[in-house]
Image 1: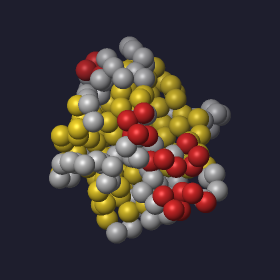
Image 2: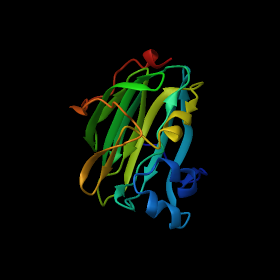
Image 3: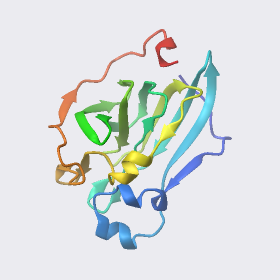
Length: 193
């Protein structure tokens, strides 16, 4: 899907919005308030589902690759991402209370589709030196919840220049597993509502 969003004003995520979810706490203490990524919301809406685009330039946040802040969906909805340019790693985790019982990562490239299941919090990582541009479909009324990721200082794993590192704030994080992306967008998006 090609949508011209050049005339749209993005929501901007700055480093100050994310210092609490980074692996490299020492770096985060003194780094300037960088602009990290842009979010273009509701570029298209159809039957209760909206389409957004997020653009994440390459960067290192200390020893960690640039990522989204990470969130859960308050109404337990799923979400679909498609990589439009670049590469991404989608890290998903399912929890009850403060216990995460499943965590997996999906590596995706241009054209790949990743489905975020209901009940999974998630963050997206740009692990490359290219700009990541991704589209997503989500229920229009879906609300993001950031508090758990903020409280736990990020997801249960960080992706760093040395690979995956367990977030020590999670006492009993499960082993990280991997899944493959899909190659096509589902025809019917009603399951997102």
